[in-house]
Length: 337
Ligand code: KG4
Ligand code: ZN
Image (cartoon, rainbow, N blue to C red):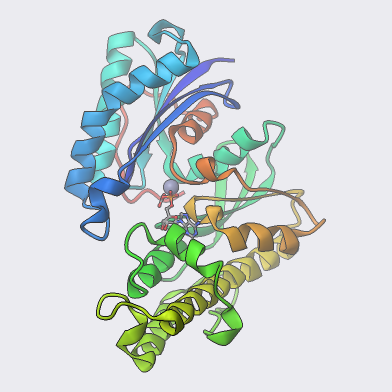
């Protein structure tokens, strides 16, 4: 039982949410910093941290108002403690600690990656561990086993780039700017992967690697010449189609690689529940293909798009199940599972 206030500031989304019993979202206010960072082609940590600080008071008011709640109704404050950008995490944790002191409310620090798994429990409140999870975000491509609440075991991860990072870098090579993943997804819908085949990464076991694929795209673009990228020439019809085909092909290789290992993990650990979450789980092809690959071997939950990308409701949900309620939170930018 209880009402949890969630605070998320690990990267470029500022978010405050109120969640009841770890499962029911009463409000989930998200401010995206896309416009702030667009001109720089990526997230500028200093600007991100300052913006979190400026936005949090207003987002807190909106979250309370949206939930029809008062500070005295809140039983627990849950704030992201890592992984993420150090300055950004410090802002969220500082605000969380200030509120906890002012309201005499318990405070807990939440692992952002756990939050991505708990997002699936907001999407389907009946979902319980044990489950197999694939968390694909800007910095992680991790396969995890979750035998019970608050326990995670990593069984596979990437050797180099994360899937989201690979999408973002490919998007930049294709001249799509920031944020890259959603733009590449959109462009890929008009392309045909078979016209520009790229290698599909394949490492033994449950390991991922996307850096070779990224290099293959770079060399292909070099071979095709400058006309394909928008920066030097306004694209004509042909080069636009080539770009779309390359986007589709890159997306195909990443998605099939992610799912090849998910398939193997499910064979090795035949859990009844599978969760695919994190920002990259918003990808159109991944959503379609994940359902096909999991099939009727397990029940697949992929959160709706707004719960795939960073938000505070998932932090509140994970905080509700946290066993370590503490008075002060340690910020840990490189936190693992
Ligand atoms: O989970 P998230 O919001 O933030 C992190 O914790 O990193 O994930 C952000 C990542 C970015 O790399 C972004 O490009 C990617 O998720 N992303 C997508 C899509 N939407 C977001 N990648 C592919 N297709 C999408 N539709
Ligand atoms: Zn995230």
